[in-house]
Image 1: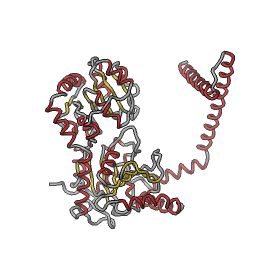
Image 2: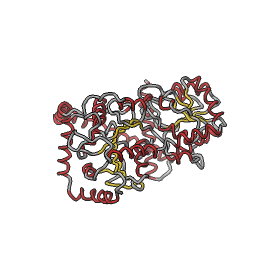
Image 3: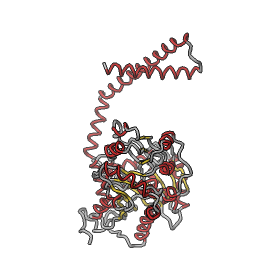
Length: 499
């Protein structure tokens, strides 16, 4: 019976929506005389749409049962067997495919793409680098993340930066300038490979894009998270990662745990945690966002504890739920997308003093932080969070907010952060953090820590290492012709441990 009621409700909603659509199309108000006709037309349209959907389903089933589909699936399985992802054979096949694609690409179309890239080449200053961020996350996403921050900061320092958004939904054709020196690109990757002496910025899931560029191209390999966090085949990620540790010009790790592991293979690896756009967050927001939920929470007169970022499996929902029930005199605000669907059905959302408002634009976050009395990072402790550098940590501090987190190593290394391990401790820490928030010395230390961990500080480390290597301080021997090789003679196994 329950499934019949559900189907009835679904049909009722569909019919109501169709009736509203008919009314909008005809711009008339319904009368008792026309209402039956409207209902009949809506039901008839729904019947036709369901018949069309059923026809499409039959065609799809016929396609799946066809010989051509079985041949395609067999070829796919054969390809995975003969060309496993990350293997040398797969890389050679990709190069051959690119060569064939260049033959097929009309010369006038390539020239239209090449012209702005040639102009870009001429604007490059001799004392600045050209960074290419190989395809990664889209530029316009709910969570403004490390790749965008690094690209923007490098451009502000005068380096040319091309952020390749091929394969994403970005509305870009060819080259589009976002800010001075910062360009989005979507087009033939071979044209980017023709740019002289670039530096590729890569991550665990896209280091294989290095194969699109000439041997010897300089690469930054940015190990930004435990590999388990990425929604890709783990075998592919491990192969990419091992290769990147061997071949990258610079290996950077976002967290101490990852850094120590990287140093066992690359003693020259650098520690490069996340950071903050200091000026944006240190400058008090001029006003609170126009947000009805935020206005309601502020009007209650209760202090506000808040979090922004992904709501995912690593978020400790039970910890915050138990805290919220212990502290009905506090409100709790969650900002961010339901990243992996784990928020759905959580008892946390049943708490009357907890509000989740979904994602907000990066530019709005300082305004929401202004409304918070305490900022939270309540993550579970697992392999992912023990190897993470919460980007929001330094943003919270720059905004002069007291911070409470669980015992993640990157947060514990910051004395200005309060560490808790249970709902009871978090409930108690709220009052302590709020009471101490205005102490001049604590405020000074929060600002000092944030200022010392800016994105400008991070990019300076990488650019300085590149300059040292260009001047001959970095190793550049052996391997494939013209290819840089890591210290240790390019051996496949790990080198001796560092002194």
